[in-house]
Amino acid sequence: MAHLFIAATITTSVAAANDVLAQLALPLYQVEKTIEYRRLDNGLEVRLLPLAQRQSVAIASQFAVGSRNESQGQTGYAHLFEHMLFKGSQNAPGDSYSQTMSALSGRFNASTFFDYTNYYLNLPSNALELALWLEADRFIRPSLTTDTVKNQQQTVLEEMATTIDNQPYIRPAMEFLLKQVQGTPYGHAVIGSKTDIEAATTESLTQFHQTFYRPDTLQLSIVGQVPPQTLTWVKAYFADWPMPNNTPQGFHPLQVNRQSVHHEIIDARGPWPGLLLAWHTVGRSHQDAAAISLVESYLLQSRSSVLAKLSLTEPKQLLYYSLPLTMEHFGVMNLVMVPRANISLDQLTEQITAIIDDFAAGGLTSEQLKQLKLRSLQQQLAKLDNDISLATTLSATLEQDRLTPLSGPWERVNAVTNADIIRVTRQYLQPGVVRLELLPPWYIRWSKAVLEWLPTGWTDSLEEQVL
Image (tube, rainbow, N blue to C red; front, side, top):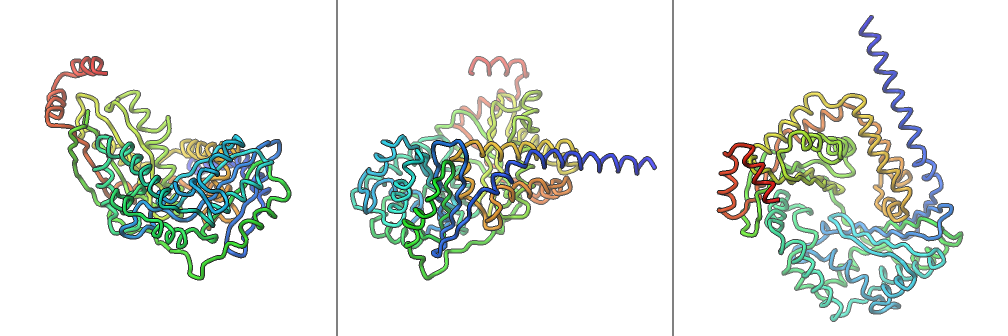
């Protein structure tokens, strides 16, 4: 009888938690109901979301083209082409686009990733028609001159030097991680290689545009003060964009080896040892993606994560950083740690391995799972208050969520059980970790080894003096 009472209590508690989350999630469904969906005859996906009491409008245009589409000898083309689309089109040459947007007090930018290239802007609603005309012109009729290509090649190479080559550890660490999926579409860096960027020509970039910038790979989302005639404008400027006869390039989930890998790199510019740990997970479209996202949040990502709590009570690292990489068909959970003076890289690895093993053994309590889901829901709800974030989210919709771009992802998170949490931890994290040691010159490594043998009080004092 006692077991029946406990089971009934747990069932009631879970039901109550689900009721609370369901109530909090209502804005996702309410906003979603106001979205107007259209798919033009050329395949272009359009979502219009009018929001009351807005004075501006946000436009997000996401193309399903990224570094995974690049062929050998053309790495970095997706990112380079993103730069080119701000440097002139048939009816708006040179810097006309940027000058016009700045004159309208518009905010605009773009980003390129493995799976996509995303363009977004926010501007006064009365300039929406002009903005749509400019967007269509640069997407369909970009102007790729020799001078512009040369100029943007130099810009990308400077970006590469600043963010990658001039930073300790970054280039060799990036190349090592990419080598783990060598031979796949994700096996090279988004920014590409210096050789390929320098070899790009107007002809090769024009061919890249004609191959991958097509209406049936574009999701266009317009959010905010959306005038009634917006769809008419979209059709006027985008409907005549012809869809190529061939089907878009397709991709499949990666088959990866999850056994442990151990490697080290030595960088003469390195100021202190570091540790990079990575686990191969799954892509956004995978059935386990929602459970993996909750596991990452619980272990590493949030302020209340297991690692964050340990860092307050038993800090073995000076700092740590985790930013998961989630592509459509592939994912990586990663963690970079900088050890304290008296802690070795082996000890850091053992600590994280023990955390994962403990988690795989028991998972979460019902309250912990509820809090994780609540945190995920709050992150999704926060996007409703930012037009650019909301438009960008809509334009990143997976095909499975085509008509449920807000509620679909949330429902998958809400459906995750503790059994799912334990299963994915055992399946994706326990089999093996990619361990990369980031090592400074020998004399710093030698000094660090000595500090690991000194009494804790001494090393703490030295740390304070250094920091």
